[in-house]
Length: 138
Image 1 (cartoon, rainbow, N blue to C red):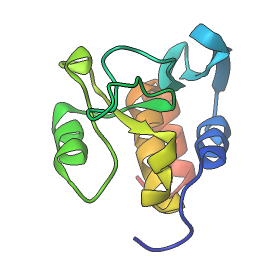
Image 2: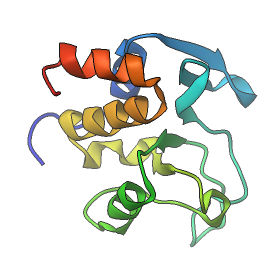
Image 3: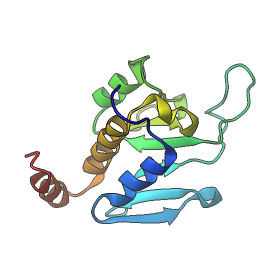
Image 4: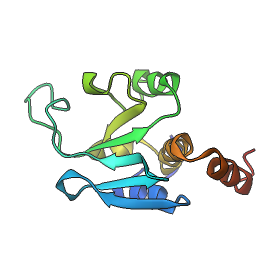
């Protein structure tokens, strides 16, 4: 991992900095980042499916990030060197979970790439193609 460690502020900056993004308030006033009315990053409230295995306490800092494919999801959650995880509640859902308290295990660049991929997976083809051209990635 190279570069500065990621922080919650980076999630907001990267997700909010993508084109055509709106932020709506989810349950518990948690921010939900959307493109074209489709969520790509959101902050969850405490839920029974995400909890500390030792204490049973529900996590109150879970962030949901969409992924492009099931293969991408499996790659992220199977790699023990990163903080991404999933729960049975998200089986079949193209997203991964990460606790805000563990974001520092990622560099800003790594987090940025995951969030950009999330945006690309939810944006319209036209918006995605335009952004990729502007970034000189296509």
